[in-house]
Length: 257
Image (tube, rainbow, N blue to C red; front, side, top):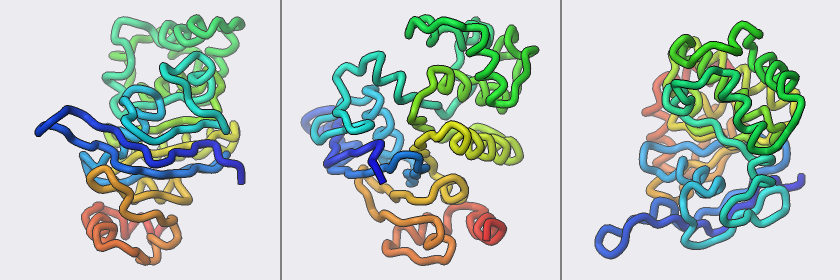
């Protein structure tokens, strides 16, 4: 398989002197084209910082990042954001409260100077299961799940190859989580997308991802796959602890099998 994302020995450092913290430390990851890959770990493990480093939102102190066979530029340019888009954890905070859905979806099209905006907006809303009636609503008029669908539509509207998903369901109710995960699964199949999904929840990661890396304190603890996790096969004691701490993991594993 051809690699879509290659990260080699990535290090991200915050602070200096006695306050220096290596949020990501000598981290390596390869994600194949069309794959859904997971990063899982407790809060502060560095998983979200990896995504932010790929997008240029966190400064890399060392290592290299390549997307679609090309080293990422610093700062990231429009061509990068045409290839890579990110969906954030909080659908309440990631959408401008004073913009309509139409304005939210029009903005990236205007920045990238893309025409045919009406068609693109209607297609993006249709992709995420929202009809034309949602186009001129404000975020406060939408449910949490509908807001996250708008955030996904905004990410999709530039027709990227890669979606970086930072805890995309953690702010949602359990039933809505399942809807969003199923939506993401369908979109990946229909558009041939590559995903990197960050979550603290092993059940969420194994639902959507074939392979994953378990992170702790900025480092990769173990690289494994969903079938081995469902079978309880782990190389690291920390991964076993994480499995036990993830509420519902056993039940989700049994229903998946």
